Image 1 (cartoon, one colour):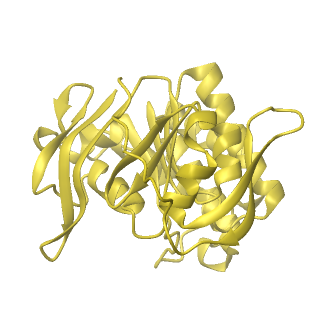
Image 2: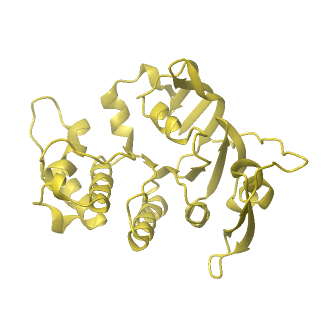
Length: 274
């Protein structure tokens, strides 16, 4: 559904992603991990068209992103960004309803189908009780859930999440990721998520991609990517990998901070196929 080929993109002439290749298959739940500065959020900005590439291309359903109008892109993908601030005192319901804009003909008001999409998105995210409140008066966690509701109201086929759990307590982190995985499994929603928490990433991802220095370092099932050697090389941290007692997925226990890389550095692997 999404293919990134030899992507180079950055800021002020300095590349952050350099020669990145990545593919996301339709119906996949893919999580990208990596240390600060590895290019995770830059990847999101490039995929959403906010940051044009200097080299390479991004294909959405086989079509070059640069040739698509913003409305076309918004009918296919929705994004929940790290920054959830809103500069206008809209109500929560009004913010969620903004997700329907890509589906509305010019100068036409919302239809019953649009209303149903908004109400469903608020119900799924537990934001219905907040409907009449001003979004500027919400906590960071509440605002994050509202932004997820707005994205779901778009009825996207590809949902991009940039650190969606950053402002949430542990109960809401699990609740949000449970919701996204349920939509992934039952409705075929394709998910590309950026997560800092390696343990949450391992529990929810079908496939993990670990970035280092703007390129794919490791790509595969969580058990193959989250290894002690990979984490030491990429994060500079000495860890112990254990198995989750019920899910069986790898979980990371931090042992110490390590400055030097292993004596025999690993070679990055190629990206997975779509």
